[in-house]
Image 1: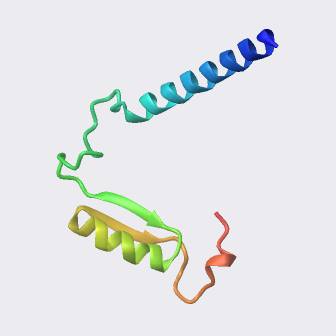
Image 2: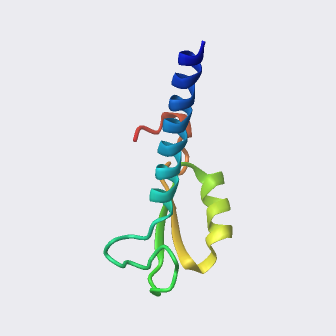
Length: 83
């Protein structure tokens, strides 16, 4: 009984540790010092949306800070898109 609790505790610590490392890695800045993610470099981001409704929403959110394009050509079904 005590051994099974100890293994569950170790597994929980391992999962929490791996999750914390992944979270911290996702929050780190880029190594090259590129500041395009913060929007301070003056360059526009290029964003590709999968279909028009997502393109529309992204354009409204990004405003003048990004150029948004759609991967689905006009007049075609989004379900037919192959990446």
